[in-house]
Image (tube, rainbow, N blue to C red; front, top):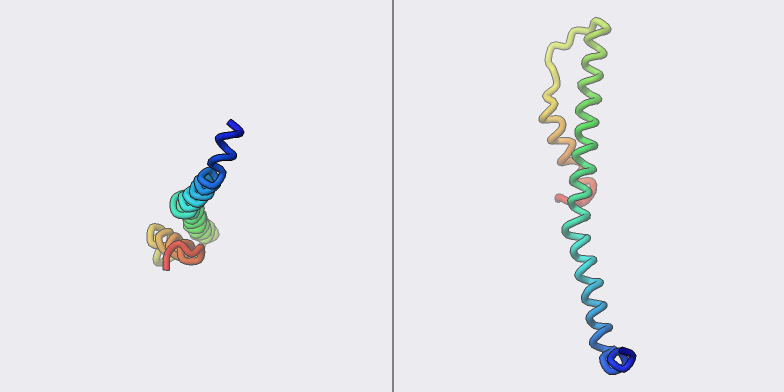
Length: 90
């Protein structure tokens, strides 16, 4: 085994470098964007939920809300804004 490594050290080092680069590229282009999307979706849902809770609280206190918020639109816009802020979308 030691003889094999001594004879092929250059090929092995190239193989290791290629494996590290491939692993880094996989992380950067597959895992990282998926994690950012999950994080942004959670953030957008929390934001939309907080607006709904605020509206409900105001209604319970006697304030008349003439136009309800469009929660789906708010969530979509917050999600898009988060993706832009995280650098995933231009």
